[in-house]
Length: 115
Image (cartoon, rainbow, N blue to C red; front, side, top):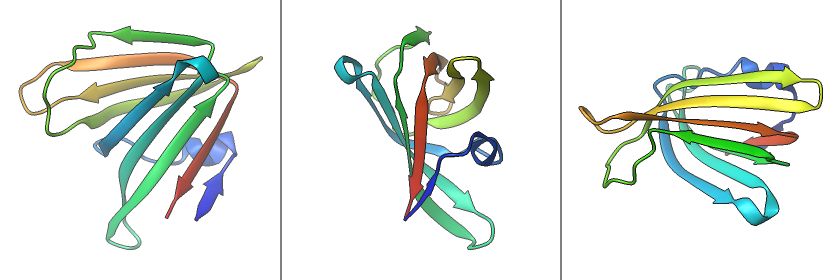
């Protein structure tokens, strides 16, 4: 298992068109976690990633509707360094023909782990 803590390393990962397996929100402890299936070109196979954010202090959903879906794909995953932490702006695509939704949040720390 490898961990990434560097903002620059995180920015180098291509999240576009990758599958989101799950997302968890622990609002009481200010944490968000995404489990992502990321294709590794070097291995010509998929790796399971766990991207965890802590110190979440601002969270905004746009067009989020709970529906039965079989696939959620990452359309874009943008990060920015702020004076007092980071911001994330994610757009997800639901099953073919369904609407997209957006999640924006500000956080203090992150960890990315893969097997």
